[in-house]
Image 1: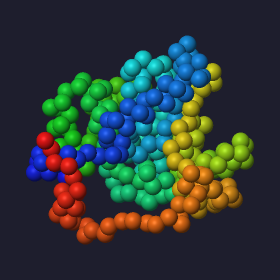
Image 2: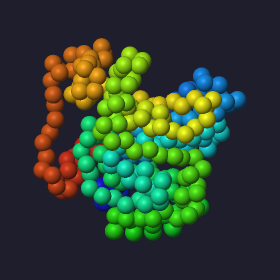
Image 3: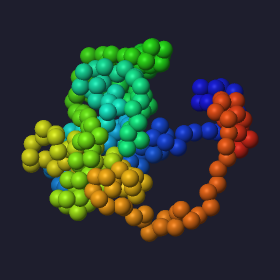
Image 4: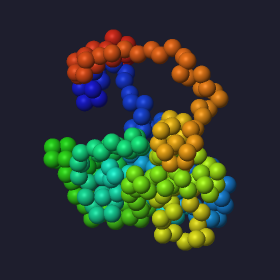
Length: 263
């Protein structure tokens, strides 16, 4: 829909996921907040970030570009590991999606990764656009040397299997009494495996509430996580939704009937 000039020229539509720059700006804040509590700017801090669409960890990169002394940004992926492959070997090739207990990471194209490649690859918009057109056509892409070297200056990555994820949830519960969700567990797994100086603190970002994934959490910890108090009655509330055919015309017409027209 965003590539449909008839829609974007007439209606004010935007994404509300991590493609939206306003969301990234808000996420930048907690990198500063965490680092300052741990001794920045006199002390560098590393961050391990569960990553699917590359938005949250890109916010960390923006914080670093703004001057925050970040030692390393660790990109933590599950078995849908296109980002791990891209950062470790330069292979940004999309495959089939493997469903897991960390569904926000079950994707093969990370929208915000293009932003990083643009920035570390020389900020050449025309070249970046052509590179992405080729990727969209073939679903395969090799990062250039400048892109790989530029990314390596800030990022490392790690891949977690379902077993790694389960062990990390169990570790957090047994060792610290913390119940965490599958995505956060993947970040914790990557943090524990990171080869970073022991004097450098590593912050693992918690990206979802464990109550969203009760079955996975119970299997790993034996505990059924409770809903936060503010939504404790969630399953008693009225559910409202509309059902649409899975076609572009049906969805775009639905949006057009509700969107605000551009002035």
